[in-house]
Length: 224
Ligand code: C5P
Image (tube, protein in one colour):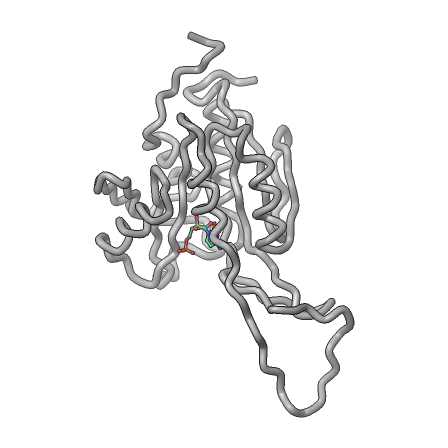
């Protein structure tokens, strides 16, 4: 295993969208491509970490040497992350979890009947908040926030409400960055109010900056 500031550390990354089934062929999802998550996986590997990826459906293949758990729904992602979280040192929650799921999914394809279709949706649990509440000392959590405009006060509130050590906020109204793009621009916020604007750059470069800005002492236990 390569040496680096994260060697001896175990990084858990969540990535991609979640799909919430309406029936066997239709779902509610979102526009996440999984590119930011994959950039985080690569950066963590390059910095020497052992990496586990929990990913919703994407068109991407992940690098070798990474333990991959493919999930589909938010509830599946929650269960998988709850199982894997206790063993990790750093959780980076880059997945775009669907905030809603259909209250019930049909087991057979719904046929058109000319009368439209009213959906009944219920909120999914906040996975990140739940994991943050049961963290053990020394574990470090990173959340993402995709917003239509960046208001620092509101983002700081979100950072604290989620219980994360770092919140990576990006503005989804900019077509040059974010969903599906290979580049991103972000604000990195800490719960103490510290804020670092990161100008537009590759998702790989942003991923590296995220790990460099963790309030995490890179003192590998087996390498001191
Ligand atoms: O509240 P909001 O959706 O803006 O929060 C985004 C952050 O929270 C992301 O890190 C996302 O992965 C996580 N999240 C979650 N469970 C949800 C919704 C979002 O863990 N149900």
